[in-house]
Image (cartoon, rainbow, N blue to C red):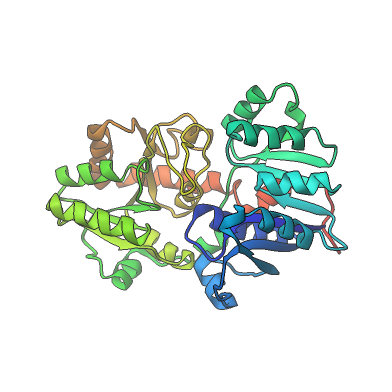
Length: 381
């Protein structure tokens, strides 16, 4: 199938939505579809080279990308129009997008469209856009990233949205990136980490709702454990480093952002991986996603062969359970610390959880996600 993929992302970017569309673009190409992606470009910015994009996003295969200038004065309306028109050039069979305005425009001009929802359309305008899309016969289906989000969409738009029109497709992982990961000893040597330390890792953004404050609180009470943070914006990194210094935490290492292609080495250096999402979880674009999120890092964590300690939130239990992770109340600091202490002394327990997580995540690759979404369509020749 020939697919015009209209993103709402700046590329390159450290935002999760940017990573998501690039992983999906690669998977579409790997599954035999002819895909071309549109993405935002800041006015006057230089186009990145192929090597940089592949390293930044951890890709093995690139595909056609058109970077279109984004004008803030028009709030991106011109971008949406130009993106859809470019993506649907002659020969395009389907528009795929997670931009509600692009989906509105694509369906309005008569093009088959799949809309991927990552939240419940908010405000009167967002709800109006979504209703117009749902009432258009050119909408092929809606993709929801979790069952919880599907339920919310059906509840909020019960008059125009029906169960059989929504498919649930959680995020995924590139398992190939973890097949030849270094050993723990090799990773520690490469990253200049003490091979004797017990290392608890966290990968992701550092802003509120991600549980960084809770990890620092645990670190203050756990001087026998090294806490490794990977990710964050320059401002957030500076803030967290200052916070750790004020708390006199000499067992905290804040590395900052690294290219996605380098993450397997950082994962391999850890003994356990932490995912302390709070009951209110912010995203880079704003809003709270705690009730319906599908964190990409959860699937990467599961592929690492390392034990996971995560917040016990209903939406995370769509994937995780007591056989493949330790699930703790987000606010119960003693429970998190007890799980870490047990992991230090009970290697068999830690390994069994990690093995079960690795086995389950085989069902959640990006390529399988594409197969599930496009199972009723034929790839292009």
